Length: 290
Image 1 (cartoon, rainbow, N blue to C red):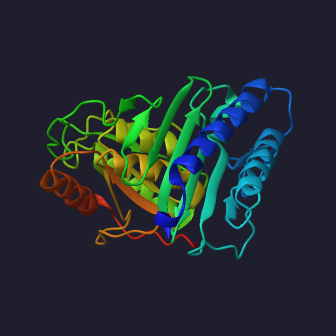
Image 2: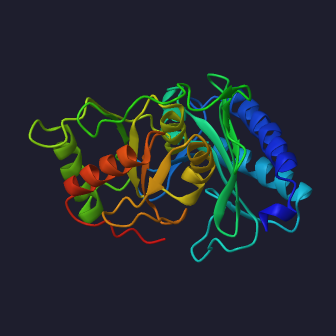
Image 3: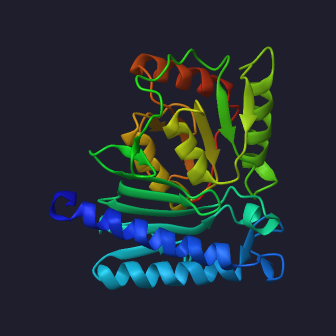
């Protein structure tokens, strides 16, 4: 149980480890290092991703050897999140940005207990921005600024006028890709959602934290993994946001579902109204395997 763990000490360990990972990222030169691909040419991995994850895994499991570890670079088919306390980590969330020298990159370190995101740390070493949260204890930017930034948060008036984060992802064909592209058009169209804009930071964790801060009103994503969202999930919920299914209809969603719709802090009725409006524009149902 989470109540049996020293979550503050784990939180502090995650921050310490994130800073060490950030130093490794800043010291790397992706322009001169080999870049490999996984599923296709848009799904990138570097030696830095692998080295940083190795450091993270070693540091966290040395401190908590009874915990499990689920990381992007060491994941193998068949691995699954269980009720055992599990570190869920992405060493470089935003590898494509990292390769291109675009500074929206984060170290995403989360702890799930009983499959629930419980502690989260997201760190962008290029901007020295740290987001952190412990379930039940609030969310913070750079350890001192409580989230959301504006408190009380401003009214949420539905999709029209909303700033929404989305991502293309690396899957560029088939049913899931078609759902994304069709829904993007509907969100932007004058006879559809007529959102103010669609934004893509290129990092799921930073998108989640942008919603937690309150600058982004919502974030819709499918195809990413638990390590992309676990840490940001805690930050967002502790900042008053909600996370529901990225497919229409379900208000409950698991961290490893690979489908998410996150909405910033606001009155519950306003949050639910935006979710309903969003779901009405989704054409089809994602069928990602997890």
